[in-house]
Image (cartoon, rainbow, N blue to C red):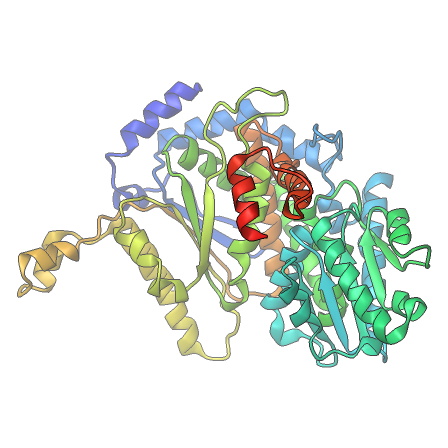
Length: 509
């Protein structure tokens, strides 16, 4: 099936209505690891579905899945496999056993920390993947936090971030956990340095070192940073990228603060999703199907963004987490061989918490001039009140229906016959906004683990379809390099090459 044929099918399907397409959906409801997905409200006919599955075969999605789970090189930029999945599945080879052992050791350390009588606070210092994941987990299960541990986070180099994280804490009862895979991340080392000085001011250098736990793939550099003092470290596998590190020792702070049993359930849910993705045929594989929809909506239907609408208090930070996972992974325009990507790649991903978002940006979704596919995730955080669960569910269903089907002028006039014509026209909803509806009965650690694993696999498979490498991030690295070069400019020791930057630097002195 040619790309030109897919473009022709996209042009033709735009005359169809989502109501008609959903009445006889081309894609059946799919289930995996406790999640159910309804994919009927998309611009996909039976012919398009067949064409997409044919393209999946041409792109060898099945082979890509096999390569990932056989520890083959799937990150050609760094000549590495991507073994984040090995942190949660029982090991099947010596290589994956070594990876898995790092998470086992982290869980053992976390149990030790949770039982310690001299720790009343943990300050987690990281940035990017080593910050987003643990924050998401901590916010999702805030009601499960152990009462004797005060967990705080710091990521920003704005000095206020660390000031707030340390405010009111006793250095003698505080553990600082620093996460940096390379142990060269500027923002993390800056905050770690300030935290170390805070400890030393009260405890002295030798005792301060005992209140530090460093998670890294470079323990030698960590020891050098401590000026030769013994460093307590946990390992991070080189084959696990930062945005996939939630399963690793990077999460030791939340393992300790929420209990290792909760985290083991989280891992088990992810492992269940891994098994689905590894064994299900492409036509029944939820990750592959979502990746194909991403490919279709972005590269052929021309939708430049996707809204993730999490109808769950526990998932209010999920869109932020997914922004890094998807946009850092697939926000690229050149493939591993240096050739331009043949199609438009990853869309802008944004979103928020339902039903809160209904009182802000949903107006734009419904009646704005941009068509944005939405992803509804219904997962009540509590069943303590049936009326609340019913309201949450009704709002999610209503939003998806109105986005898809709209409200015609005739419907407005029939329902509100006394309206002036100009007001009636303003109440028209054009509809035609496609959506996916993912749901589970209750958000648990297992379900969160499964959901994140689903998005990881979806992201990787979408990268295969777009012919890019989902596991490097050169766009991130360039900004870090430039920031280092500009520090002498800010000090007046050098001039910037760019005239606007030089002018701004002079204004900011």
